[in-house]
Length: 229
Ligand code: B12
Image (cartoon, rainbow, N blue to C red; front, side, top):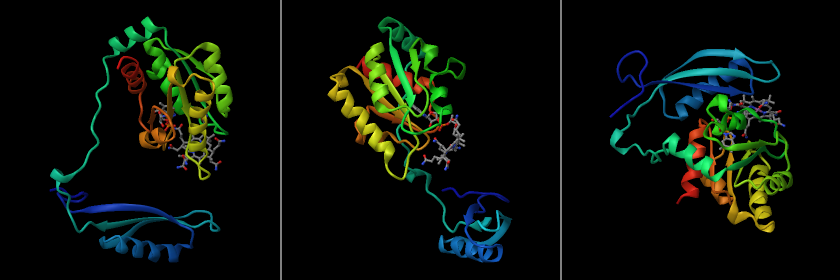
């Protein structure tokens, strides 16, 4: 069994951080109420910061967790081991694999996609993939057209998730357009982004989805696994 700890072994102390759209005094007592409702004991406000007075207050509350976790019962997702980098590179070069990549919709987040592609971030270029990066705020139509033009076997799209479910609509559109243009069975479709989940991507017709912390080798390994299965 295990409990979080701060001052001594297994003391159960945790810290919650929250923003409340209320003034300092109200936020102080409301945050304690929230912590108590979550079941924490010995609750105490340890830090407060008034943001802009018209916005609210940031509060940190300390409390003691009244339960411990049985490590035997902790559920963890299965680890899928990556392929050896040398093997990945051999297949990529043999098959002369090309990738079209873009951040889609009206999304300007470029850093994540670049991490996956760039050789200097250990991205997939490192394994010999020829990458055609189209940029940010790219339409799905342009992505598909580019893939057809350069005969790419892999399409990578990056997207944040949105209230209007635009991320889902874009993934669905990518799949549908690939079907309409007759290339769906010839391309691997992969979506990624800060809050993208594999399940969500598959529900919208992608072959897989990758979220936070993804490395180039994870993506390269998936592609080669799929092409050689
Ligand atoms: C930097 C940043 C920006 C910069 C982007 C600059 C740039 N050139 O990229 C700027 C200031 C422009 C920006 C703007 C906005 N942002 Co912003 N931004 C961030 C921030 C702080 C970091 C993102 C980042 O670069 N992370 C580092 C990279 C390496 O991580 P990553 O993006 O997660 O990428 C990894 C994985 O997700 C994955 N991955 C990503 N893409 C792909 C694609 C494929 C194919 C694969 C396989 C994997 C993959 O692999 C990457 C490497 O591990 C995040 C908060 C955060 N800490 O995540 C918010 C965040 C992404 N932004 C957010 C929001 C809401 C916005 C705005 C809408 C804010 C606003 N109201 O104006 C605007 C949108 C503007 C627009 N039109 O796009 C939200 C998105 C929430 C969501 N629903 O998904 C976040 C999560 C902040 C938050 N908690 O609210 N933002």
